[in-house]
Length: 231
Image (cartoon, rainbow, N blue to C red; front, top):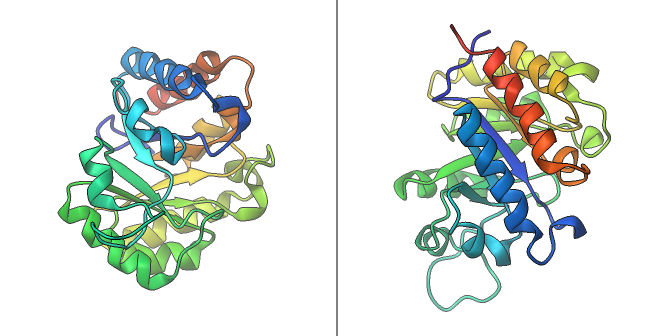
């Protein structure tokens, strides 16, 4: 399958790893920005919540790792979509396996983010969830089997049928939602295989954040996207 530069997306989730503490989040985002310019693909970074405003000052797309359904106003300790947008955050992960939320919250957040012009990335654990939430028409569905997250075993190689079946589930919704692949991605070959199976991009965390040379590994992943472009 070929992938266009306009629809593909490469998301780097920083999580709360020690490696990105202090100024290191900025360093990682700067590396991603340089690679993005080199390959002309869209890269988005998800720094810890307290650092999104700082990272958003850089020339890189910034997503939140999570957002809540509460409204602007007298609420404490929640992440509010409208406040994120004013902080120049372009989108958010929703329902990550490490921060699962109720179905009704997902159903509320997707249209709310759409009305704000923000990108929604709904994370799902299996094909059934991909089918269920694709009907909401989020911008992206990210398939991540929980047992493979951080394992170093890529879903694209360990369980390729999950990607192909999720691609079908998303297409069957007959809307503009695209599928991303996550869990265990540690090499450019893993990325290339995911794209060949029909994914329109990747969601990766430890495969980059835990690497010794951030820019080198981001470059390796990004180069895999160019090999799948239609010439």
